[in-house]
Length: 350
Ligand code: AMP
Ligand code: MG
Image 1 (cartoon, rainbow, N blue to C red):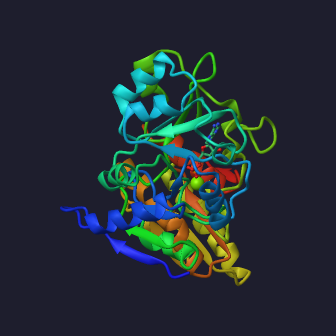
Image 2: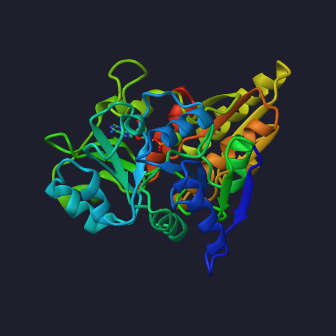
């Protein structure tokens, strides 16, 4: 299959391109499109055969449910068995935006879209092209991240092409995304709402709107202790091909430790990759040193992280050492992704 990459013009939003992708979705096919979080791989959420194609193209395990993207609150009412009061409050505060809510589903949503669960994950994306695509297709759009399962989520259309070229008919290219990590997921079917995946919208922000909210204990547990509630969070996502280890501690101690580890690896004739920041990158002597941005700019760190992890797959290094990024707001979300990429390998230094 030939994959067409259609550029979106930021002014007119490339209406013809959106029309073409909308037609593909309407007729049961797949189209990749930008959202404010990462690129999504979309299909008609109410068409079981279309949903199945997403799993095939990504190589995604069939028990890992999809997020349904909507363009109005009424769409949520159409597919939910009941709409909790908290959903209305959160939608008023954060939609369109990077918050996914889990509610009980009705029969409009096939089992193929929800991995057989009786609940459905729903989000209204804050991106003009995504909203236009949903409206023009006349469908609700099931869309996971548009990467091959197990690779970092795509933050550029080029990343989508790297993984899915030849497997899908169309990619809408809207340039680099704004946030760079996936949406926060909050489960509203629990008595006390539960955060299943951290993201740009933090626990504190949700608390301010609906009061009590907890974080899934399965998220912070070491592999296999307590399973996370979101089926997708149990897989080793975001893994670069080389092994990755996080070194955490004070700035100088981290630099010293990473350089010492680099020397050991060099003595063993191994090539070393390093993930640092603008403030520290110059201090390392690894073979490939990449900066995620300035330490004070956590938005930039989130936006660059997946691109950097992908870049390490295209250079040959044997091991990657990364600094830790416990930033004030998005630190939990950034470290959740980085820890998974590292298979929870962390070295603490004083
Ligand atoms: P992605 O679409 O790649 O961002 O992944 C979607 C995430 O949402 C995965 O971790 C899924 O397991 C999770 N998810 C989707 N629907 C549900 C649901 N009904 N209940 C729990 N988790 C869900
Ligand atoms: Mg994903």
